[in-house]
Length: 167
Image (cartoon, rainbow, N blue to C red; front, side, top):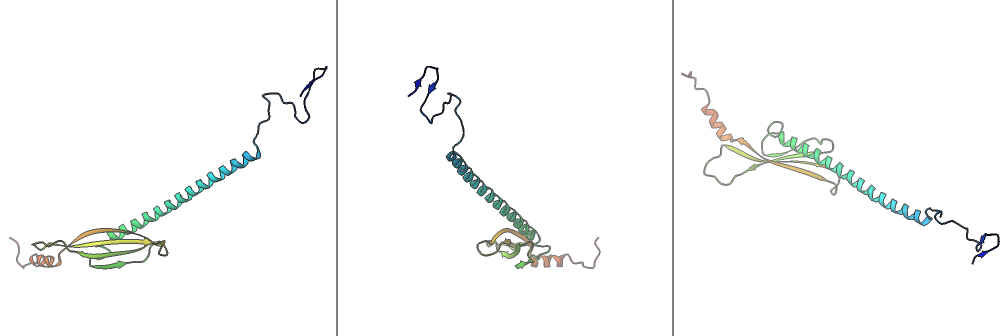
């Protein structure tokens, strides 16, 4: 309860400063600052998880690309570096990636005639990683044709020189 004295001043109860309206002090309380930091910490934690997973996925994608390139190069080497014969072929690991090429005969369904070509089913596999749970692999397959050995031999006999000159 205020008291108006004769000199025109107003006295208020002790402990309440007189603050004109519109000029109140503004600022953050300690609780507001702590809540803001907690929200910031949670947000940054989620962002860090997202970025670390993205980096891991990018690295894994690069490994799959390198493995696919190795498997494709080994598949393309069949017939030149790797003989086109039934069997399994492996080589020295390259940059932590091991490879294997398996060549199996391909038997088409029964036909009434003798095919002029032998067919081979080729599987090229590149693998990497350590341990059973971290081991990864990629396989590419192809079907290749090679001239039938029996027909090639009989064709070579027909093409053999006879000793006569052509007319």
